[in-house]
Amino acid sequence: MDFRIVKLKIMKKIHIINGPNLNLLGKREKSIYGESSFDTFYKELTFQFPQFELFYFQSNHEGLLLDYIHEHGFDADGFVLNAGAYTHTSIALADAISAVTTPVVEVHISNVHARESFRHNSTISRVCKGVILGFGLDSYTLALQSFLL
Ligand code: DQA
Image (cartoon, rainbow, N blue to C red; front, side):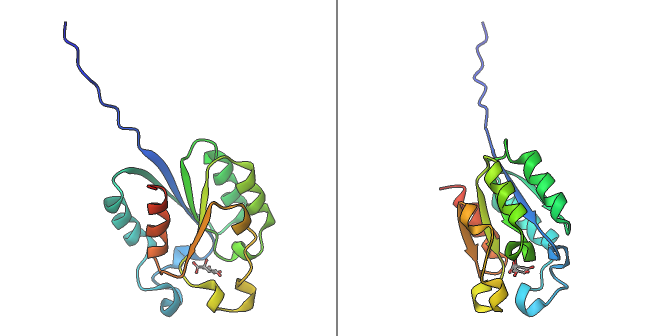
């Protein structure tokens, strides 16, 4: 009899979710958000983290962000969420994060605490596993690394 050992590699499913205006990375306020588009950076991330099955979603619409969190938030292993300006306003996003079982790491490219006071408050930090901010696009890299701990 031929017994073969099948090694099943179960990869963590990690979703990067970007909120409003983050589709303009590389074009938008480069002195704050940098020169790279997210698509270019995302390709680098897929090479850097072969241990993850990575997914990417961006929307400028709050409801679509909620739908995405609802749809994937019971089977994904992690969300890396930059909610953009909704970070400072959206109770609905905080409720969605509380409703699902997938742990969420909140990220920001800029150090929001060094900016205008309306950016100092986050409605979602309280319900996130952790928060990483101020490291440019490397904030996403650090957030992904947190799912290796
Ligand atoms: C941001 C900070 C937010 O205040 C802002 O509205 C953004 C981007 C960041 O990544 O630094 O759109 O989330």
